[in-house]
Amino acid sequence: MRRAWILPTMLVLCGSVIATVLAVRGEAGRAAAFLLPFVLFAGVNSPLAFPRSISAAEAERRSAVDGRPVVFWRPGCTYCLRLRLSLGRRARQVHWVNIWRDSDGAAVVRAANDGNETVPTVVVAGQPHVNPDPAWVRDRLTRPATRAGR
Image (cartoon, rainbow, N blue to C red; front, side, top):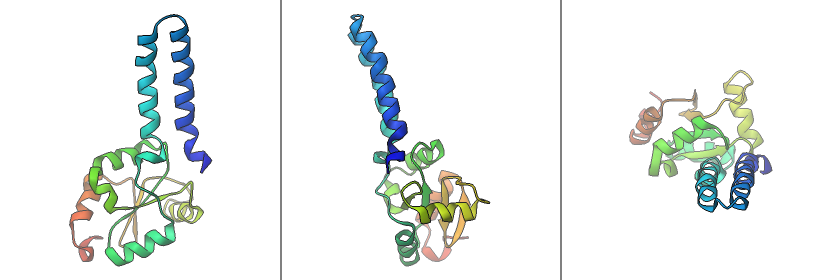
């Protein structure tokens, strides 16, 4: 869990240090303008930007019932963030598994990627797809469960 917050914490700390130096020099406006992008970037790279993660076992169980894709992701991954932002409100229809919080999820990703933890790995109808096009994932959300893997 702590590992997921390292990048966002470092971004906020670095931005805060630089903003503090600017504020001490009397450049409060510039300090605030400098800190804002750091805080925003930290926010989108934090676990808060993603729907609540569940375990790999729970995601697979739910996916078997409703046919929705399972997305294996990790904080700080720009491709995961691209997928998340591209899905917009539909992101809540997908089952998200944070591989840094779930060792079984990490094992699924390694098995699908020759031992590498390449994310996002999207599993649809039992078939893994590494870093698929976000439009393809959106299409899987609109198709019936019986056609989702085709």
